Length: 536
Image (cartoon, rainbow, N blue to C red; front, side):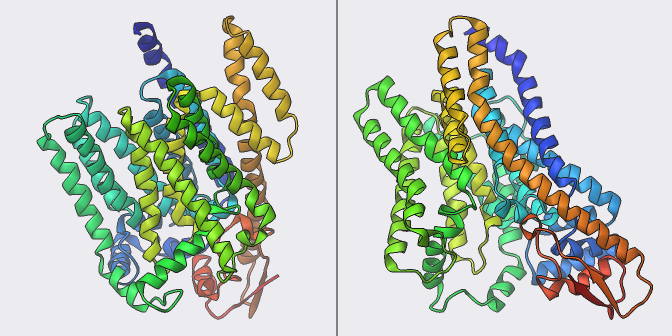
């Protein structure tokens, strides 16, 4: 025990640094080619107004757009010049590195061996995020400020609050992060308050500790920050002018958004790799617990979770309507989708509850916060993949906690299955090599080599996804550079010919998608308002 503790103290800092720099460098390789798009053009224009002009615009924005003042002030400042945009790319990459770091810290719980596996899973989970999600929330500067930045603050607050409750850290910094996370965006703000209540409830009700008076500060500050966001005048103003997707009131909107989860959340490319990681973790965790603890109910749910994974994985191949982005599909399609979603929730909730029964509450907290982040969106008239990033963070944390039972077996199984699904037959050879090394595990080099080999398939899948996005954004950045050269050479003609992105999957909205951004594009690049932009 003392030896493991000494080894953890020795290795954990290096593991944390490693996952931070790996994810930061990998994401920066893509972010280096991210150019101003969509709302970047508007906020970048505000960032050039000076502090007085910026605050004036933000006050107006708070009244008519949304309550995310902290996020948009930072966003505007970082988009105010080419140099600041370059800094923004580094900043967003570092935020993503921080997300991976804190996912690892939370899942490892001080064990360096678990930390290694959790670091691999956290890094791969971020690299595996599909382009349909990242184009709105990660590899877009305004999107990253609205979704990556708040998630990074929430996870850092989680780490600090746990440490403060354990007596390993003071309350001042914890309270500061409670306020900052509460001041960000609606989902994360509410999740911050929820996290505070959950952790303090565990501390007082489960562990039977007295409520620490200092804990009132993060509770009150997170609630105050949340109130400034969710009770902003703009929230009520926007709700009064935004047309709902369907008529019939709130219940009709909830039903509509619930059925839309079929293709926006559950099936299709939006979150496929993330669901794959979760739905392989749950049955494996339950199966191992059945073998080790001889719990019949765990065995039954292990079978149910395996059936759930098979249904989620294979059903779209046989019922392609599940992948349709058309809302009005045959009723049986909605029934299939709701059945799979229900099975997903039941299996993950059971695993979370079984974990909590052994005084490991983090999977249950991750489940509650992740599910809650999507439940609150059911009443929203506008829902998109970007609003699912906070849920992705909780799903990765949930999976990372479950891998503690058999970390490298899980990494090998999930990675090999995913690689095989993507046409990489060599994954079978990796599995056989891992089995041979495991049989030789009494020898230290073989044991270490087995752990490394187990990570190869998942790392390969993550690299493939990251490399595809790198190449896509690089190609679009070349188009943007040519457009900026044409803008620099503009000499007062009535029209200016510019080129569309090579692949719109690797970028967010541009003026040729939505003319709303035409005026912002011209002002951002110093073009006269009367010039006609011709996109080819």
